[in-house]
Length: 637
Ligand SMILES: Cc1ncc(C[n+]2csc(CCOP(=O)(O)OP(=O)(O)O)c2C)c(N)n1
Ligand SMILES: CC(=O)[C@@H](O)[C@H](O)COP(=O)(O)O
Ligand SMILES: [Mg+2]
Image (cartoon, rainbow, N blue to C red):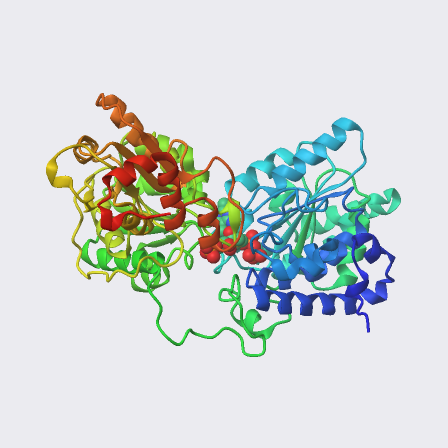
């Protein structure tokens, strides 16, 4: 028998349903989300929390004519299911499948591409302003979480919107959670709004939405004036120029729908405060929304289980352990995260050093300058941040840290391909964007052990240094427990081509930056090439480079990052500066955005697995390779 959900292939179908059928639809939708995510993995708790809100939005507003902008977009699975992608949810976050975030090219209902947080109010305001300019009567709606609301960008947009005289609706989806528990004064303020006098004054809902009907409005205004004079101060959002409505129960369709229907008729900036529960309807996720924020596949009847055999440690875990060990060794160390405690491997550090741990909220710019301030006072800050999110703090990195040459360590996680999250989260650009900044050092560990030692090397410098490492596990190299450092700015030759002894320049040398050293070694076995583990993209080991250049006929650079402007470009510049003219092939991520999907496959599509590296080198330098390789290593055919 067809379910209600089966009948909805478009919000137009949803709008045909009688109100009474929306609750059973919500139940079906929630069950579908749980079942679907348990099969594919993905973001769960946030999506269980937006089921009713999504139904209400598409039911009340004329989507996609009215624009809906979801902040971050990790909570848009119900939206995807109701907007024609139900049957493709089994492909979620897989190569060629449905994206885990809104993407404009994926659906006309995805009005704005998101995944980095706190952009929704700006984008929706832009759309509202465009509608005003063009004389269109469409509505623009931003749905932003309490975590995302903590970012400066959200406040910049509120500041603008409050005076912009546009028909903008901001919906604050307040579930009292970021990925981990939310932090900061705004969070405390929202908690206040939820309690005591404010919550009692939730008649605000009735009062403010009545503003549409002039006679009632006058009555409401007088009531409001009276009430405000007595007990209810204006909310922060009213002071920003919004009409504040709420808080209302975001799981109660009987509150949501009439409230949205009324708001739809209001003019000017509206602010609806909706209260939801992360993980709503699935007890295990309600009890542990952190674990169920972004789980892998699991059996919903059992829940998440611990893997039986201990797997190789991830780079994140190697960093987390190093951070604790170095903090025990050096009291000046402080650890900073912009709201990514779990993802950045800082759970243990917070437990061991609670007074030296700082979660500053989703506020990357602030995290960087906050670190700069600490460094000015003799502390040794370690900012643990995903490569993609440091893009937010770029000016702060240049102006506040590097220009003042402050010793801040950037532990850059998720450098390179990340897989399921796709292009928004790929750490593709850090080498190019860091390398051009004076005073910066950039370390690219090839494996777990090097990661630990390069973190120590970075920590010992008196200037800023970034250590970039990828998502997941490495080659499985044993990590030595001490706090030894690798030398600053120095690489090593890992494999020498056969016949080096005769001194004549011959064959190809691969200069690997980071974890691609291992596929490079595999390719070099077949090519008879030399492999150099460069370790540092900046400073470049120019001495080693000159030595290797003098003994080979061609060089190949290799990095898991944008090839344009990356470490390979640095090698090209260094060769030119030294007056060395020789063929150079630069391999890395091409000048295109990489899709979401299995990371190994995405890397292979970029030609960065062992076979791809070998093929590229053969195509460009086949003759040199074959001439240099000893007969035993020659690959025939
Ligand atoms: C600029 C940026 N920093 C960090 C993140 C990682 N991140 C994704 S979701 C999230 C928490 C968002 O909290 P909230 O907006 O309240 O949504 P909820 O998860 O509670 O649904 C964080 C920190 C991000 N996507 N973008
Ligand atoms: C939506 C978001 O930005 C995070 O939840 C992100 O998906 C986490 O990625 P990791 O799984 O790599 O920590
Ligand atoms: Mg939240």
